[in-house]
Length: 150
Image (cartoon, rainbow, N blue to C red; front, side):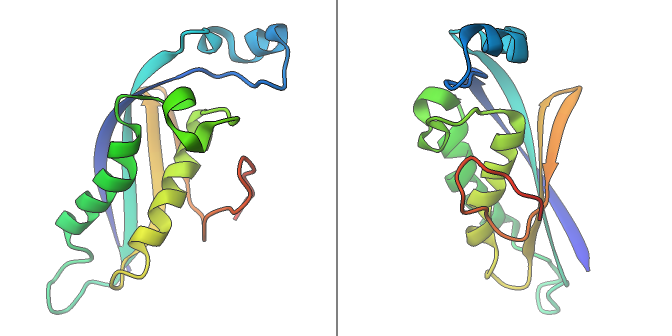
């Protein structure tokens, strides 16, 4: 089994705010990240695929194919977006790094699996130099806004 990780970058803004909570509860829970105007991050996302090496190509996956899928599914959707306002997947859902990482995994799952022998293993999303989230799942979670352990 071989693991290949490819790194990508995008910039996005968000506001950590839960409509079900009071103004005071949101301020206490999210602090400065609850700024009504939002704030931005330069995210780094790492996509890890795994599988056997293809004997005819010597590769796990064609990098151009992987890049094209990530560009279409992730970068075009999230780069220079305000996650709360511009991304339908986060309407009514708090765009934390945890939720964004799971969303990226779910968006890539069907597009990467079934293309040859490689399969999606993990997504790692770095929000700051001190904060990152990793998600490994068996399949996308069909219940919007609920994350279960896989």
